[in-house]
Length: 194
Ligand SMILES: Nc1nc2c(ncn2[C@@H]2O[C@H](COP(=O)(O)OP(=O)(O)OP(=O)(O)O)[C@@H](O)[C@H]2O)c(=O)[nH]1
Ligand SMILES: [Mg+2]
Image 1 (cartoon, helix red, strand yellow):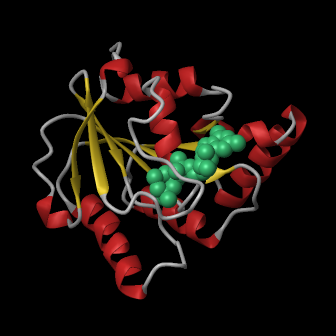
Image 2 (image 1 turned 30 degrees about the vertical axis):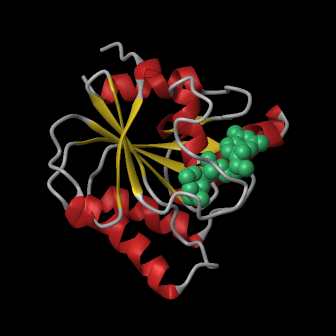
């Protein structure tokens, strides 16, 4: 199914999982550590500059934000693992993410974002183990590829796949800055929402 991504509009923000409305359309959730580039990737997929708010400071997205386009819902989740907020706030984010996934929703695809420059972080490993154990359909988007040479991108992607125990076919190398991998990500989303 071809999806018109450029018609995306902000639907609503939710501070607790209880506030989330029923899942009535296919949902594509963007998950990953704080500052990994979730909101930037949503903007790029939708060919927009500031649909989702981004920041160089981690912890920008503190709620679950729903965006709607062409009958599908893009879900911007708060980042996990940001150490510099209060324990209460960190717990609220963790509850939000867990609460979202605990609901009976139409999880068509989870885009799991991982910074391509780093070695596998414990929280990334946990996220992937969770997605696998829940049998959620996912694709890993390696982010910020523009910060590495092509050769290094490939090297890092292979190393991270090994550490996560996944295949390269389950991943896309992306850059929200350069546009790398965005067409492929749009295709995966379309396939998942058929
Ligand atoms: N070079 C480069 N920088 C990026 C890319 N994607 C995001 N960034 C930068 O990374 C920072 C964080 O981006 P966000 O999109 O706000 O990240 P987020 O995952 O939504 O962060 P939280 O909402 O805090 O969890 C910003 O300074 C972005 O400009 C990319 O592909 N390349
Ligand atoms: Mg964000």
